[in-house]
Image (cartoon, rainbow, N blue to C red; front, side, top):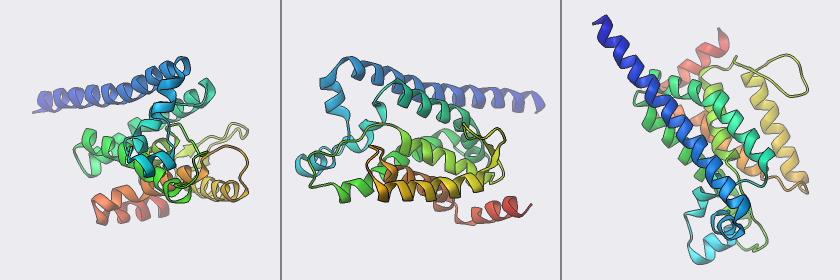
Length: 218
């Protein structure tokens, strides 16, 4: 039995990392191609006006595969890399079928993160958005749900901040910047993706709210 369990763990770990690397690899590859091919970039970016007018609903997801520049791409993929495995492990431990639910979290997180701007900018042909930030925020906040005390580093602060504190700061700051505007960042996507990621475990298994409370108060 011990050998079987160990073998199964190896299989699970292998599948997990393959899935994570496939997401990162596909995003890096398509983003690079879009850097070189502006037609591909335009075809995949998120434009709520086009989605609404021409029913090109694929753009709700395809924009996660393209980024504005290398800095944007690297930041998103590093964040995903740092938190994807932990999120996957928690989903697998508490819900099961880790690969399925992690992909559901990522894909649904991207779609949900796109909805606020779909309603806000459906008549604005000038509005475009790219990047996996909404989906990555969903992964990050799902980790915070399961481990609210997880240490998260700000670039300019040398000590880790508890996850639930980071989450609150993140949402408040994003809300403020969204109202302020003018910085070409889709803050509404960050907010929607983060909130969805936090709620996702409870949407699948409502009783998991007890896990969050127990971890928060421990």
